[in-house]
Image (cartoon, rainbow, N blue to C red; front, top):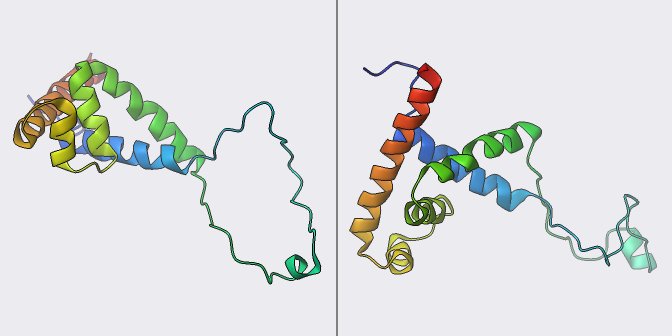
Length: 132
């Protein structure tokens, strides 16, 4: 019997999509050989000092709440079969169905059915864990 607090397949997919979005928004990891500093970059020319240079890309980093939600959702992929988890993660990253079908080696409609089946099974497992 379903409970009002049970998680649905649509909610799982929505959370995985948000997790993928959060992961893309995280700052890039720099290698050990790259200079790291919390100080602002030096101004090398007078034109740069007053904002005459081009505007760089503004990057909005995720909030701690976003990262916590991502950390909760990504392990859900481990509850799926490997191929189904690949399909789910590709779809969470907004990959088109025709490309997902090519990656999975099946028709896009088959990939959609496999994703829905995997999401329903994952929802059942998560709801069972929450109830028990």
